[in-house]
Image (tube, rainbow, N blue to C red; front, side, top):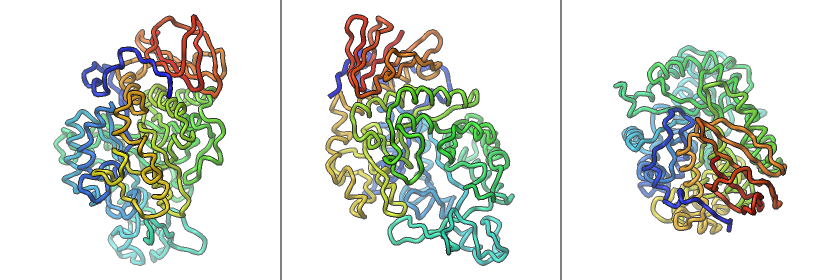
Length: 535
């Protein structure tokens, strides 16, 4: 158990945040995103699938945690359990609810003082989408302009990936179900016009200019200038995406758009500048925290993992990211998401490393994003079963209680295959991970996240402050300051497995102190200890 010393400021429960005065400088650095795979969050009707009404039921939990913005995976109708390839873009997946449920959800989010970001991937369609079904081998179809075919008879649609000897890709979204993914014709003006209309609609669905029923932002999945490096759709940032977001922001200038750069080794500055979006994802920082220079979708990180929590590399990548992101723009600081393995698994369930990850996630520059369950330290590794279920272990049901059969637990995948056998519900890990357990333990990871979020949201130095590396005496220590308008916060972390000692540069009482002790002017760090204080 870590050595815990907290100042009296943090004795109150997480819910006390709502009674505090928050930072008064508006901007997205003030936000804390909670990234939800809604199918796995909370089930309101007993069918094991998380849904919109279930999220509404748990808005109180999100406020208690202290997050301010909800990010969903896609909502549109799809045969893929993750909904990333649309069967019908204009309908809500019925397992999530109805269009009325969606509008009620957005209004409830805003009534609770929160924001909502909708995830979109509108470059593709699956078979079953009327544009494809009615235009395949039928060039006279009124929908022929919507799908990109490489021949005049519409026999050969260009696809997301074409294996040798096949003109249609077999893609298994769920056992025994064959699905195909084709490109929309993003060069066609009809598709461009539809895309613009589609995105602007969700900004203000009823057109009254009030935005209480509208999204506060978009996340654009798999954003590329040369889509999938095929040479079919090029200059996408300027010619396709920029007009879309310009139209959206003409309706609501406050709309926030974050793009997921397809090449995770990039910082995303070119994407931001050319497309007119507001933010990219801080993948280089994530990889520095993980200890791996590269990470590719669908591959286990273990093969490339080198040295997690390398102090020098983390400082280097934060500095480089801040240098590259254009002035007035942002990046998302995160540890994990729906496409990556869980951070707790990356660091092999090392509790001290997991807690250090929380500090870095919340206190480093950037807009923090917490992937649902991360605040509990849930585990999950990408599988190798040959299709979409590979990612179910990193999209498991939120463990509200240890028992997967308790009401609300969204175990849509229960007993459906080998991924269930390694579930934290099946192995018994949920007995420690469950929210109901951690809320009763003042030393739990969940309580640490609550306190760190509270600390961030009540300190301008953290939300809007400059970042400066502090040169430590010991190379295993990451030390940095955040400073704004005369306020300064110092964070010092021993990111090594060795005990380290350094001088204490201030006589101020620490606000946070774990696995550290003060002896005179010396600060002694146990492995993965940290200290946070104001100067």
